[in-house]
Image (cartoon, rainbow, N blue to C red; front, side):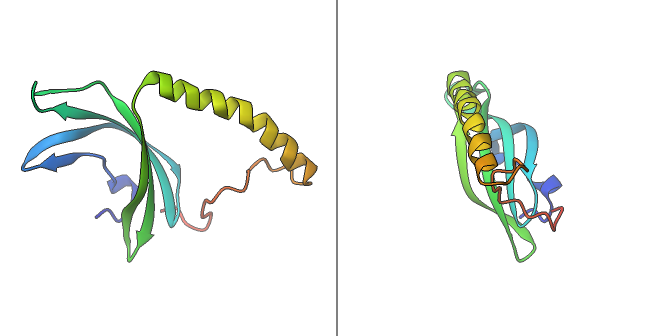
Length: 119
């Protein structure tokens, strides 16, 4: 298990064969609950080649000094990724409007970051 965010990887081996390889990683939130995006490829065992890249958003919880995966969501293709972005672009003006009506102008949207910890 990884003790720091830098140590987290999305690589996965099955019987000594790398079947999922991480291409890139972006840490979205840090703290006792961390959110990390991974760009990765999965092995097509029949062809012996890696498939086109996918993305995953993974939530980790730090417990007893190690990060453990709690949940994940795979974004399997460009169309799905662009649909997600489109919804975000539609919703954030609504969030900003509602937040300003509530008297809070920090734009944070009530996120669940743990600002007291870097890892």
